[in-house]
Length: 172
Length: 289
Image (cartoon, each protein chain N blue to C red):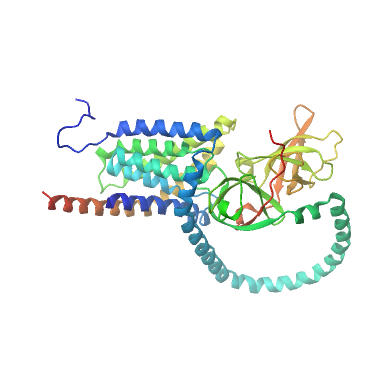
């Protein structure tokens, strides 16, 4: 229960930051994708199910406020969360390389997904332009923010896990 | 053994792949349902609006206050230097002003000619503050702090200063989503003010990087449209009220078919620094189908 509330707050906070504060701090009109960082991190820290659920809710929030149809971003974020969950088995909290690599790949996949569905299908064929001017800048900024945000997410998760372990023992 | 068979006393859990499958179907259904209809957006946007919008409003107020303060500090030094510069300019401008006053007579005449002045003033407008911008980097949409409770409805036109910003595409009780005309998926029926030749103005992510948007399908058989001409919303659009300034023609070239022309428009609104917008509370009159 506690975990659910804290996770919901995190999603909420990241969404708010992404469309208000980071919009003001954008470099050349590019904002980092905090929701991808959140979805991917919980994916590889907690497994497929948590990843896909968090992805689903992150996407749904984006859908309600900024998308033309409800469900598209939910679907995209959900699959990214699920795929990250596959790496839970080889995740160690001490290692920063795997998380950064996974978040990088996730953001790239997200960008490609957006491009193919929302742009390519409308006849915008300049793939290299969109990679160089939209997807890559977003990845770079996202990775920069990851280095600050990821330790925080990790710390929250470790705290929650320790808490759950303690209360679990109490009832044994 | 099937993973969803429950053992006695064991807590029931749904494996990830089943959950993924169920939610995928749910999302696909939602996409299909909301593609043409608006059945879910009502309750969802109401719920989301009450939770998220107050925070967005708060952050944007604090944010713009902080940005304002920090800018003030940075600017003080600049301002002293600029003051001298400006005093020099005042002299130059006084001369220019005289010249412009002459132009103003001409402008008044032109306005009367096009009835623009009267039309703009006729519309009842309401101011709204932008409280959130698109969370991604692909489209230009933003959320304003007024919604159905303030009388905002879908398809209302949004302006800033004297130029067209976009139109309301989604509305919640206390918020509304505005799609900007520079957004890649936006199209506006427009016309050249001087010759009333019609065209389609479309947002383009790639072109907007250089500050312009594109127009196409301009039939200009007399070759009268030139760079710098004003482009306004057309009278045949079924979403936009006529005669709202979109921008100025930046470049124009004939298409390969030699019948139509296309090119770029510099928008009249500075989309990077939008903070407050005006929503025109009047909808375009349409013939009911």
